Image 1 (cartoon, rainbow, N blue to C red):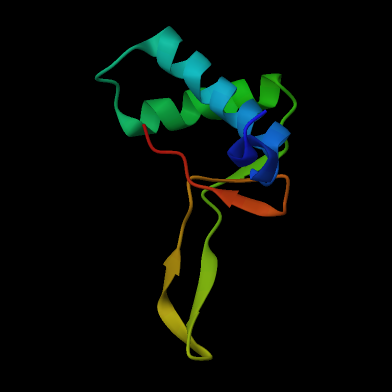
Image 2: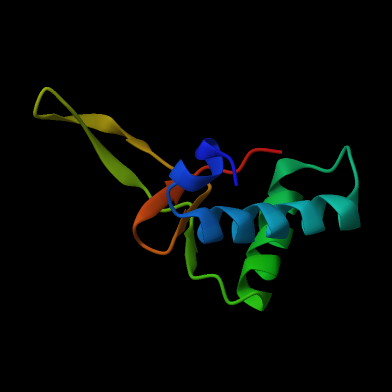
Length: 87
């Protein structure tokens, strides 16, 4: 095991999500619209029993001031990390 592999936070979670994303990519191939990939990955994450929420708005603060724009990640998984999945 390399030092980088040891230091990777949430290693099992990262591998689980990357594995789900690779399955979707292998099944659907290239050139698929992002909305289709999003929905397919939602199905794959659910089948693998990976807890997630899709496109949940997050309030952004700038120097303590709330911005009117929100950040909307593709997925939040395990309620402790934000994972932005881009294909």
